[in-house]
Length: 369
Image (cartoon, rainbow, N blue to C red; front, side):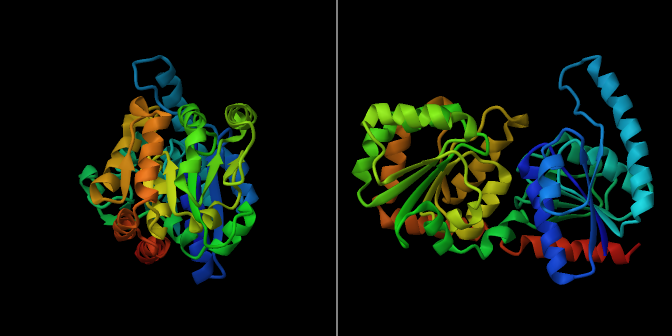
């Protein structure tokens, strides 16, 4: 099978596409891929590292306010459609898969107009503008959150697949996670992450509560600051405590996140859809702090889905303090009954077979060509 993948802007759009590629490779050793992304997007760096052939187009997103820039965006979109048509005709894919971000727009639209079977995958509880636009043209809309199908009333076909990142972490080795952190196997681990670039509000709360962490008992706290905040956060904690205690591990970035997640007892994080797919696949209790700086406030909607199910607690950033965060961590880590309940609720939301469900749908629509 020949597959074009497209999606970009953030890792949340890129990694699901990569997960689909890896799943198809496991089922079809002859599969061939082309990834079409933006020239300046994160995908231009990440995708080549995954050894997936990559080509780029020039594209930008719409401004939500009336602006002359939107006229330029429309012209750029039309040119990108033209470029995409050329790439698609040359590669001759059996199916095109879009995983979100405005770069999907011209690629998937061009595929639909050429009669190439196409799928879009929506990661969030509230759909993005690009996927809403594309939903009327594609063969199938796949959603990560059950019930999100209702947002795509004009779609020909919608299916609930979950997020394929769930499949990526399912078989991660927790022993490697403990070893990479230098933590004894089987220890209780609280993982605090502010996203790939970090988050100032979470950094500030972490510094505020640093002197309270000793009250958690035999628990290791792993704090991933993001590269930009590492030095200042480490220094602030040292000034507050006088040193970095053995139970606190401050890191700029984690390169083996699936393995670290597999070793985690409780996670504190933003509420990006791909990350939520990973933690529900593993059944990790969570404290979610949605980013308020995202389109349509979709992270809060994502977080509320887990909160309603009993899999997570949510702290809005406006209510985030070191005291509030520590109290929530302490409540969960000192009550095994709460931990078990949240784990079970999280696993009920998980879709570890997500990537295989998407691949099955790709094969189904490809045969209708």
